[in-house]
Image 1 (spheres, helix red, strand yellow):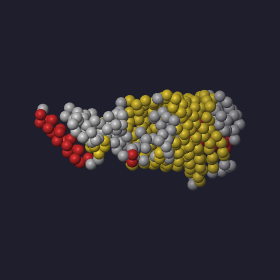
Image 2 (cartoon, rainbow, N blue to C red):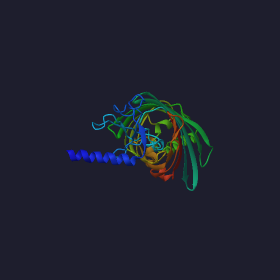
Image 3 (cartoon, helix red, strand yellow):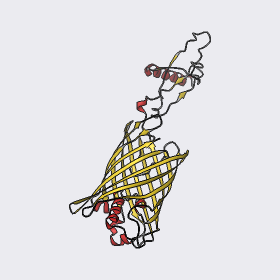
Amino acid sequence: MRSIEMLASVAVAVAMVFSGSFAHADDGNSKPAAAPEGENTKARPVRKVASLVEPLPLSTEQTVQPTADQPTRAVAVARPPDGDKLGAPLVPGWILRPVIPGTAMRLDTTAAPATTNGQTAVDTVSFLSGSYKVAPNFAIGGRFGAFHYEPVKGDAQDGVTNLMLNGQYGTPVGSHFHVAAVLGVSAPIGSGSGNSPDPNMTAALIAGRYSRAGMDNTIFFTNYLGFVTGADVAYHYRRFTTQAEVSVSPLVRVQGALASPDTQIVAASAGWMAGYFLLPRLSAAAEARYSTVLTTPVAIEKDPSARNNLSFAAGFRGYFALTDKVSFRPGVSYGTGIYGKVADLHYQFVQVDLPVVF
């Protein structure tokens, strides 16, 4: 036992010699720690000693308590400089939901060209969304979108989507996991509703669903009251984050029976994301998105290839502190269709994401 104590003392001494940084001891009230009786009362510097077991987390600070051999010395563990702090607790995805409830505003724009027989149509969708954290683990939010569709033939179309309102509960589980659940409803106020919509507007709404990789179906079904129930789980370790998501979206027709023959539709979606902080203020993330229709509406009977869609996207995101509590996290990603209509029509997805987190 005595030899172990001697080895520990030597290890601490070596770490103190090589640490090279000094700080005054703190008694908890921003006053210098008292010197031993009979010694000079001037505050004595002590060395900051890094953990001898493993590197400290990039955004934490710890204090080593005085030992019996050093009753009057406080040894502070070094805190990483500001430049080493990560820009966010977890790497966020692109279309997948944030897994931590919070207060934020976000402008998210996707331009999605699709090519048929060498001719290209382009749909551009912009969503303005916001959330407000009303409790430590709960936030409420809303989202509303506008779109512009340039078809191969016919007139360009401009319109708005349904209004989505939702609540999200999320909590950490252990040191590395976060889980969340969401419940939302979409109000059928979007363009192209009713019994006699413009066919070009109907085509624009269909293109809007594909431009979002089928992950936001409820917000484009403007004759339907839509519901979203979903769950997310994320794992993070230091600079790495991975997240999985699943959602089920029942839709009930409330208007436009002549234009929308299906009284009910049930859609579902799932996604997986992996991200890594390449630098403290720069992350990269890749995301796979899968959407399907669980029922068989008339549109699926006519075109079974529209039932399942799989796409992939990847990109980079920066993190900029606007104030002590507000950060700007712009990102850009590129994606492509892999299976289903998004592949048959050669969809590409260019997304510019501009969130401000409070």
